[in-house]
Image 1 (cartoon, rainbow, N blue to C red):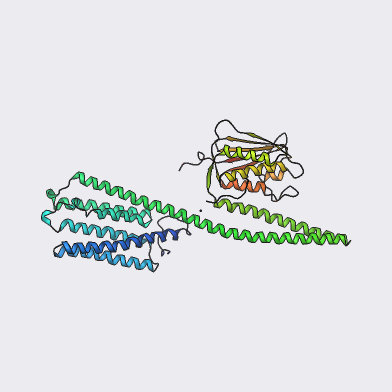
Image 2 (image 1 turned 30 degrees about the vertical axis):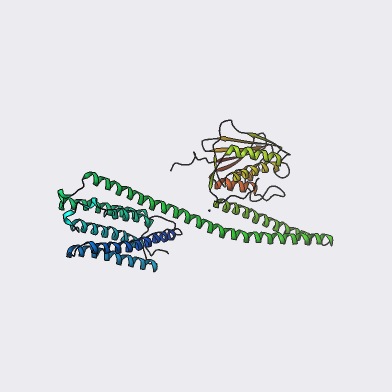
Length: 455
């Protein structure tokens, strides 16, 4: 019921000016995704240009100027695509490479549509670009800009192709005038379509960037946690070694007593045992602190039905600790859901630790009456645990209820330490005070969805 385990959720560029401030560890991940998008676009461009070239040659009568414009543009696009693919394969592609690719797309599309507008295959039947399917190429390359992941590149592609569209309309109106079969309504409609695709392209790039950075951060976090846990395992081994040394010292002390050896020999073994136990306590306290830090670092903030979870926890605590009287106070009004790493299990662990700590007291005298209160405040949800025990010693109050070692003869000093770390990782705050009539009070303020700053 009160398990302490938390539920965890789960080709580099050449040197270039970074288009956005990213963690250096995450930057290569985003760049690799951008190159995958560029590889796909470059291959598609090659296929598209070959098909356009075949269509142009089959329907266009030989003419020097149209052939010079269209063939030059298409061949340049093919060569550029091959060069970009080569750069990607050699891991020499840069942010400028992607920018060049977008500029090439816009330039080739503009020149191809300009040739169609100025030298159509059947000039006597020509009624304008917007009467045929050719302008759809603008929509395709605008959206393709968003496949490069970087939103700035999507904006560049949108701006270039919007300029191309407006310039093509201006050229057509001058060259063909009254012969155009479309008017302002068709111009505005296509402009709206182009604007929609631009917005979709930028949104696609932005969303892809967000997902990639989030995924990369999670991967880095998991890798870091894996290394930290490996270090914790090594520290655990060190703590076991210290405890083994302490056991050996205690055995030597018992033998010294049995053999009636001099008091100095017994004292020496006792001092060694005391030092080993103190070292083991320190190691285990550090181990617990870091373990909870890493566990909570892997968990996500989750909304918890505060009252329902605490109702269930109080019932379980009364059964678990029948030697104390546990009072439970919750207002009749609805208590907001609290945000905690690990969700319900974390809140259960927090209240269990606080009640257990009150029950144990200082190890010599513990509480017999424990009161748990929950209420809504401006800062969030406040959970308060009060008892009639001995209260906190002065050093514990100065350190926020957390001591480097336990004040209890058989304790390890980890109860409030773990609770503090769980609360801190959830963005909350833990405070400790002594009551005037005797006893201790621990207050925990947890954030709610409403208490989070507006984005």
